[in-house]
Length: 211
View 1 (cartoon, rainbow, N blue to C red):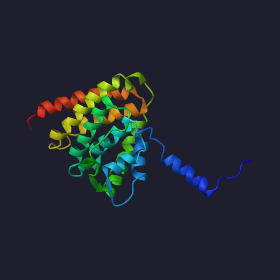
View 2 (cartoon, rainbow, N blue to C red):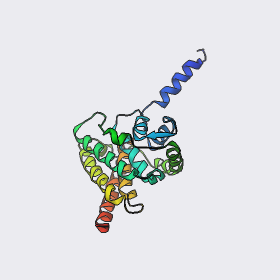
View 3 (tube, rainbow, N blue to C red):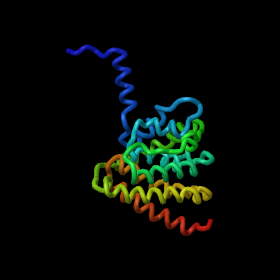
């Protein structure tokens, strides 16, 4: 019979669990909440909270921030749009963690806004995750990720003009979130849905132009 784990061993085990890479939307939201601290957090804090170098989770964080109640923070749509575009471009040329300008990473907001937005987002995140499965995995990997990267970059570019229309960013943001979640969970069905909503986002942009 093995001895019961010591307090130190339990702490190490808990830290290892907290620091593991996220494997789904709910896990990503919970890590953003658990692994940030203080009254103010930066965009860099939220990205670092995932302990992940994969492009899927790194895209999902700013996309969810843009379409969730967190997106109501002034300037959030512009900042997340720029971050998403830079990450998507680097998906084509690099396999490591993408570089982002420190000025964007230093964008700060209250942690209370972050946690409140996460709490409001968790119910629909759990609902969406209940439909997630490992399907059509081939289209979540190379060479399809180059196509995904190009579309994500274009959707992120739409954030800038659409930020001036109420709730308009939610459409391209949802498309990016589906792409990112599909890549993270290896679910090609979500990637296909991302393509569909991207077409809708382009339709909205054309209809709204020049606003």
